[in-house]
Amino acid sequence: MAYLDGEVPVERAREYAAHLDQCRECQALAADLKSLYRQMNAWQVGAAPESLDLAVKSAIEAERHLPERKEAAALNLARPSWRRPWVWAVAGVGAVLVLVGLGTRTAYLRKPPAAESSINLSPFVPAGPSVNQGRAVGEFESRAARAPTPQEALRLQQTENAMAGTVPSGPMIARRASVSLVTKEFDLSRAQLDAIRHRRGGYAAGLQVEAPAGAGRTLTASLRIPADQLDSSLAEVKKLGRVEHESQNGEEVTEQYVDLNARLSNSRNTEQRLVEVLNQRTGKMADILAVENEIARVRGEIEQMEAEQKSLEHRIAYAELQVELKEEYKAALNVAPPSGAAQLRNSLVEGLGTAADSLLGFARLVFSCGPTLLLWALILFWPARILWRRWRAAHRSTKASA
Image (cartoon, rainbow, N blue to C red; front, side, top):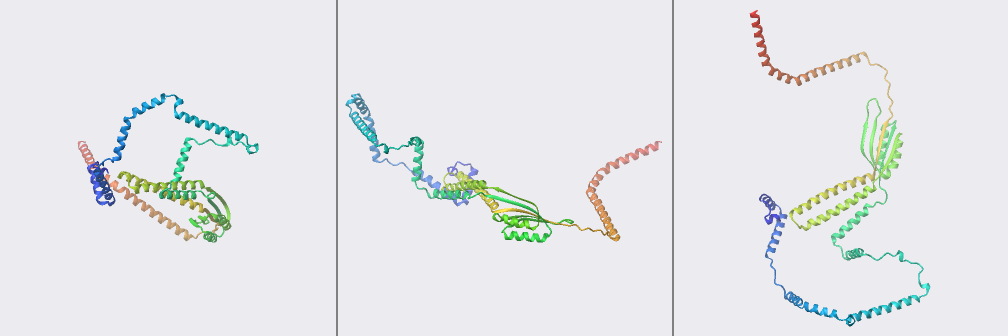
């Protein structure tokens, strides 16, 4: 709108003009605004209707006769009060009310005692609503009487569904267990562990096998087992060998899950309202861009919370089972020494290896330090040569004089 009004600098106006040449949506918006400007410029105030003229003239005439009416009212107030008609009317109504009250009291006193209640409920009856309470009730009744719009009904239904999903039926526990075993038959125990995992509907999140020389093999596995199958799976795993260590723990995440779902529902409602505001396309271009940026930010938060929700639900549905399987290893005793030829061959191989390493180290030293030494030799050669010649000339002159 500032561009159409001619209120932007020349450079920005050129950028807007270049953008309008390529964007059809902005062209349509500019055309709508220009049409609105033309309609506003062509609009003129029409002639007032005759009924309005008559009403204005009547009001002027009534204003002219206002002093006369005030004078007549002052004379009426100056009359004695007992001569005014409305005084007699008020007095008659008051007398009728007094007679009705006396008759009601007499009838109440003549009732038998059995008709009266022996319990006084007046202390337990709350006082009448205050002015603010009356206004709140009125506003609530007016809102209840008004039918909601389709957008409000959809948003209300989504909120109810989300709030219904945020209240779990019971505590939500993320379970974790670990067990350490020692087995004599390592290969068989590993195959049985894989069979247990497949039979219980789990999967391996991580698995590592170590087989060092001169020691037993070790298997470390991180399994994900359905939460309702954890106890039975753990019982089967403990039969694979001798249990050295076992632990179980659980983390209750009910409050975290409910809070996450509530924040996710609020962010979705905020996104829907922002989309409705954007669809109306009211305001300046800067306002529209601000709304789009806010929608992008809210959408990023929603995607992040949805990822957290899926991760939390996966932790609840699949328990973590850490299994460490060790092989019971017995070292073999080798008492036969190697032969003399084998010992000489091993020594020769070790000597050749040491010589090759020394030669390679010297070559690396020459290649790393040689260029630097050569550079300084070239720099210091001419000064050293000049000093050497001067020293030889001085030495020869000393010998000649001697």
